[in-house]
Image (cartoon, rainbow, N blue to C red):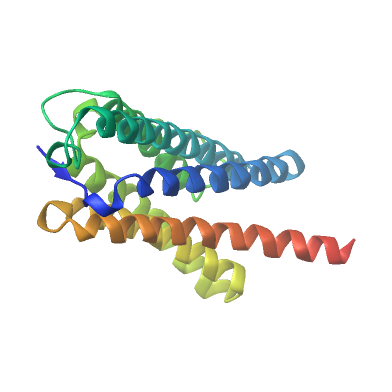
Length: 218
């Protein structure tokens, strides 16, 4: 299966992955601080989920950037705007690592909304799901529960922070929906990545607001 990437967008996706990873690590840091204070299991799941997701994006950024440099030196324009071709390369490995990390991360995000008490159940996802369209469909299935709960949370609190959190998770879900449909139009690939960046910036704005409020209170 070939996934074609628009030529003019080649390399920009690596930058978006890097920005998303940095914001994700910042979110994980503050989630761990919250867990250290409250010892709530949901905060630990949020911390661990964003650590895994950010690690996946960091590897994906590095492998994508490596792919850009490699093919610009060894290939023509006709052959370096696609991924998942028959030759397994560094960039493909980066996607597989990201796939596995993000599926586990979304599972942890879903567990955030499970009751604090009771035994935690684990589930194992068969590795054959981790393939481009199947992965994005599975990821949307997992993140859809988180989206649903974030919508419920916003309807309950109706404040700016809950709105931004809801927007962030909806953006993550839209990212996977658009990449699921990317075989029909290359522009879906570009739109999906800007929506992903928008979602992570939304999370960053929540952290900024919370810390600004804490600073004013101090």
